[in-house]
Image 1 (cartoon, rainbow, N blue to C red):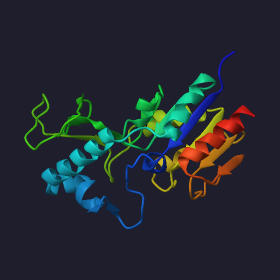
Image 2 (cartoon, rainbow, N blue to C red; image 1 turned 180 degrees about the vertical axis):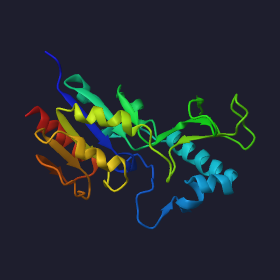
Image 3 (cartoon, rainbow, N blue to C red; image 1 turned 135 degrees about the vertical axis):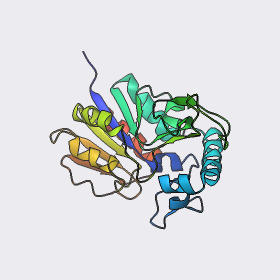
Length: 227
């Protein structure tokens, strides 16, 4: 018998419990930086050295962090379900927790690419420096979707959500589009679960709200799915 398909949309809240601060607050700051100065195409044009420095530090933070019980719990669901994680996070904590099918909407901090050619992507564990060039001669930049940039992976995410038997949202405020709009593609009739310390308005049917941090909420989700 084929396993039921669970599709999980994860956001900043799941990685926060691993000590990773991400841009989520309305003050426009990310680790003390104005996001317009470090996470937009304009910032890259104006001061690429600052942008590289900012993401080099984010990369170090990710490498120092460990998956938490929420990441591990979602990976364990693979024993009984066909699970796909669609994450807004740029870290690799889902991978390290053991999840196999992961779609990164906003890029990956442990990858870099040519600033000219989106398809020239390479793994990176250390720093990217000004003057580091891709084979096409262009400066290497973080493989991250900045604010004001297109989110190409959204086109792959939509059919995944449409195919879900169960849809789960963990640790996202559902205010960053187009990712937040994925909720609307989940079939009306399927069960949906929203896990967050502050439940965002999802505006969809058949929702079970679990108003807890991700680590505790995923435990509760597992219990509900087994019952």
